[in-house]
Length: 151
Image 1 (cartoon, helix red, strand yellow):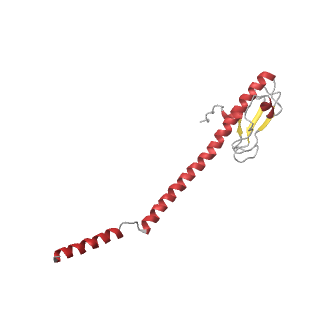
Image 2 (tube, one colour):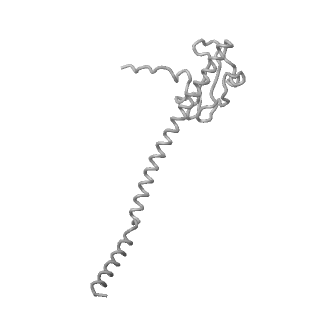
């Protein structure tokens, strides 16, 4: 074996060792990647939670509209609103047995026999689950056109 060959082999062996040692990630690089992933997860969680609240409002509005249609059909057939919402299920005007809003609270219903424009009151107490607060959802106001603000 010539001296050049030995020198060449030892040089090649040490170069291979350096490449192997440099092949992994440093602790700093891993921590940076984990921090970025954590930030992205926090942003995603915030966006999902915000959509959950909007989804509950939309689901409640849909439930109120469905019950309103059933009440209107009932009134057409019997000429008056039922005393309670369960009557709609018993008479098969409504097949859904869930008479609750998106927050799991029972809907507020009250027949109003003398009122021609609004023969019943049908509302959800909204996210705060308190009746009579500004976040209540009224079936008569869901599809009402927005009135422009006075300039």
